[in-house]
Length: 146
Image (cartoon, rainbow, N blue to C red; front, side, top):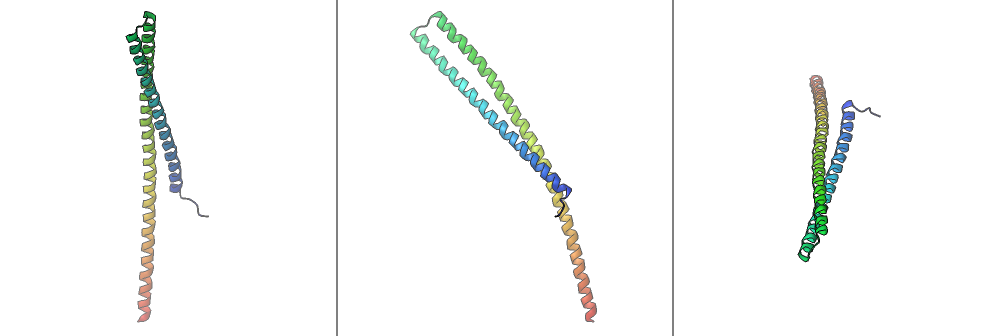
């Protein structure tokens, strides 16, 4: 069994890091989508409740009912503001996860480049050695032909 070169080991480690970073990025994106859905639901609920207030106001509301509607709308507005901050935080986590993924991918690609360069050097040395052997055999053949 051939032993792995150190660069191959580094590439394997870097590939695992890239996979882990990609998974974290995926989780961050899904979490962001969830926070946006919650925000949308809150906004829809607020709009529906505001419409109920309008409908109730046109039919006539008592002061306490009107006050309760306004109080609840304020609470919904506060919840919406809080959810907007959660969405903003989730967007920040996406940016951070994307940056981490790009960094690990860049490192993996640099290791691949180093491995490719090393392989090219080995191939050039082998080609030179093969050419030298061919030249020596041709020279011997010419020498013995005479």
